Amino acid sequence: MAIERTFSILKPDATARNLTGAINAVIEKSGLRIVAQKRIHMSRREAETFYAVHKERPFFGELVDFMISGPVVVQVLEGEGAVLRYREIMGATNPESAADGTIRKLYAKSIGENSVHGSDSQDNAKIEIAQFFSGNEIVG
Ligand code: CMP
Image 1 (spheres, helix red, strand yellow):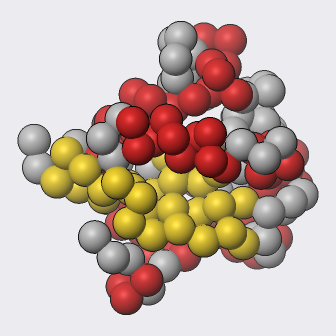
Image 2: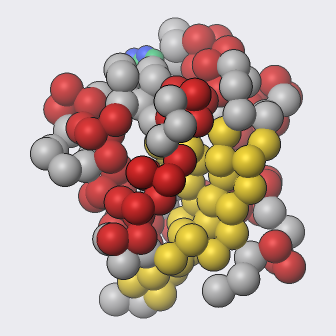
Image 3: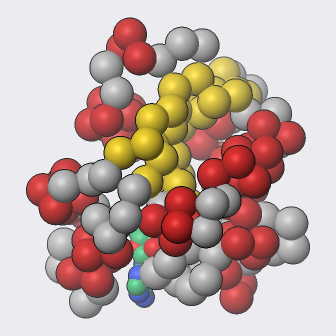
């Protein structure tokens, strides 16, 4: 499988509980490499842009409010089949359905406060990475 990059967010429920290192340990143990990372507080506009695809969903307002409720850590992860690999180790969106050992099974509080985001395709990974990182901030 080809070396790819994917975009990751450690969400406010994770930073609030000081889980940044614990989640990064799961990521690194999986073979993925953290090639860019920064802790930011997203603006409402940034969160609305990032989740624009969910604009019509009933949970959109709640999702945006949550994502700007505290700091997040945005990351670029690199490795073989990184998009799929990260989705595997994140586990299902709803932690109740997530497999044992996945980040969401271990740490997520609910479907909304689910600790991590990962890109769902290579095309979206490129778009999401470009929203938060410039090329020289990514060091593989
Ligand atoms: P994420 O992978 O960041 O992509 C969209 C997010 O919407 C998802 O994770 C969840 O955190 C959130 N989400 C999905 N379904 C619901 C829901 N029913 N209620 C609240 N938030 C949701």
